[in-house]
Image 1 (cartoon, helix red, strand yellow):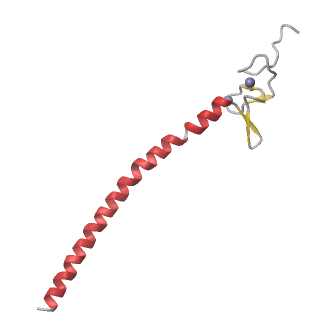
Image 2: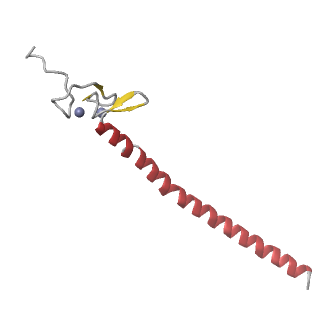
Length: 96
Ligand SMILES: [Zn+2]
Ligand SMILES: [Zn+2]
């Protein structure tokens, strides 16, 4: 009995673990685990999930989109200005 360590929480050796984190397989007690869709997640994996994979994709999207939008609006403004000049020339030519 003494040879086998008790199945204790990774963060709380005095507490009994109630489950395993699905991501890092860490033993978690009721205090350390958070059930997401009925699945145990440890505190560390929840933090990593909240801050890890999301921010790079958001940063990439935010970094790329405004430049593309700015380039599009700039070309659109140039073409509209050219069209306006063309219309103005036609009107000036039609009414001397
Ligand atoms: Zn985990
Ligand atoms: Zn714990």
